[in-house]
Image 1 (cartoon, rainbow, N blue to C red):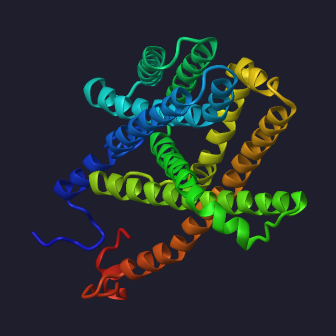
Image 2: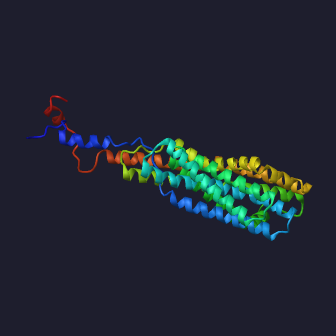
Image 3: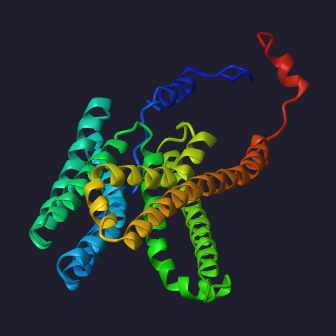
Length: 346
């Protein structure tokens, strides 16, 4: 029996209908979440170890308090990212076993953050000096990990995965950038006067924040692009992420840094007050560091969001070109008027 143009046989129409019935509206998991989780846990362990070494190597008393206050932001930021990354990995496991359920996903994310926070708090209490500052560090670290787990309970898992990976990359860069600060101070004209030192410090901080934002934005864009390709391979009908997802992923590292600052100022308030009360110089240093962290978070937020959005925008033209090129594959004869006449029903 001759197949008439414009009519689709029942056997062929059933097959696409089966593909269209695939639950493409289900949330897409964060791909490769185990790798950022392991790296984030390793980074948290490194921050805890370096803080312990700095505190134990110093003389007991006021110096230990000051060093604890200086090291607190690094530990809190690492705990926040570790809680989010581990919760994402746990959410993937729960989704494979029990399916995607919003309540189960959120409860599991909170539970994963609690496990990370409890483990970090126990490690701090067992290895640090038994002082009131130790309890402050342990409690604030546990709270940061739980909050990170709660963030990972969001429905857009790939965006949270991009934020966690990009934030971790930015944190690692900031530590690595410390080796380049002295040459940059000379480059920006640091001299013997106090004014020149302050101006040079501002430019060094801005350079660090700008580069950290660029790295965060590019990493967020790269992760989301990889997630989209993996989702398309598994389900060609899966909807792609639109520009707000890239904007949020690029801004996410800055938002997490600002969230970490809120946690530090609330949970670590007593430690910061103790350090500020040591001397006038310590009070000025704590105020200056707090302002610098806020400025850094704002810079990373806007630069990361702009970088990710521009990188996504550059892919739109290539996607449109591919769609135009693929609209009429080579070797396919164009439709003719004879085809329209052959089927009166059309």
